Length: 219
Image 1: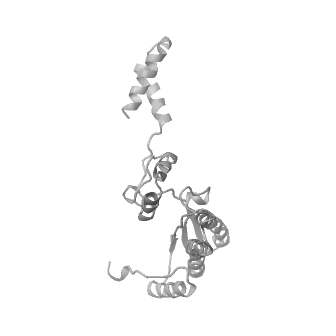
Image 2 (image 1 turned 60 degrees about the vertical axis):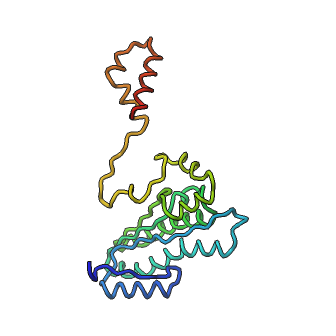
Image 3 (image 1 turned 90 degrees about the vertical axis):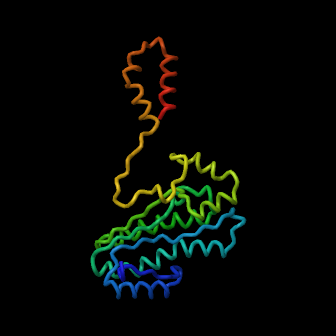
């Protein structure tokens, strides 16, 4: 793609670094249409184990960086009366993290609140602001957490409707239609509507149940 793509090494927790990179990008490309805030770290440990430096590090990366980047990029978007801002939070922000510490959960909840506020503030300027709250995804960070906490992966699997957290290869490309898989209730309903089930007598309940079980096991 030649000069159409350029990578920047930016300290997103530092206002000077953010301002410098945004200024250079705006000068080179004229405008920024889309901003995706995705910087995130996690530090494990209970409340008693977390120290002030750990807390500040997580909050600076997971929340302050969103504020700094959004503040700078929004200036050009307001001027152009157009823009899309997408903030990455987590399901932990809507409930709590079963994997990570209080700082992580708090930071992700803060992202949701930040998104709601700036969405109402910037909407009048033609800027859309949305938040995505994904579940666990197999990444190097998650794999390290599983390695350091025996039995935790099994707990996550039991809580996940898909049984296994997805990896990057299983995440569909943008714009690609996602085929919804049938859940167990839909499968059972389909089985019960099958002719061989409907034609069975009500007095043969046990054989009907056995037939259903055999059918489900083949899905």
